[in-house]
Image (cartoon, rainbow, N blue to C red; front, top):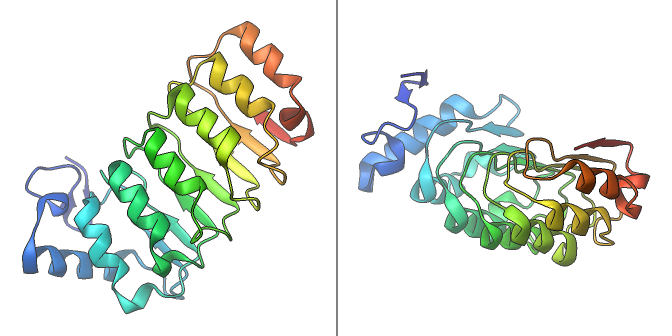
Length: 206
């Protein structure tokens, strides 16, 4: 099994299942290993920190300057998305990845209505379970007006969610969107390209 900083990814005996002091010690090591030298990027991709782990990390004073946060493949789920979206420790973040975290409509709702993420410009949500419901939440309820780049690939989104996004007025500064490998039809993708949001984007990958 692949390893990052001595942790076996997704092993049931590894960080996402630790508790108590063992969890605290493990998360301290994760931050030591994964925080950039300038303190502005925390790359936790595949570290399996889980909900409890990200709560410990959020209390680490070393992360106060981070602007890029990679949470890809960390088993945080909707509960973790809610926590991160409400945690002031992440208020400077302008680039975040939530890929491969089993997020659904509730998770995306927490993210797009977050007061903490008001500086966010890039949001990566590939390989989750947003489906049409989550896509509609993003299209109709988004409050992250600075968003410029959005990755929704592999989210089981169908034509209903695709068309809702193509016609959204809630993403005024979006310039790039990726929605490949979803459940859309050829007809749906053609119709979406004529939507007002997608027409103004510089890059649309359907």
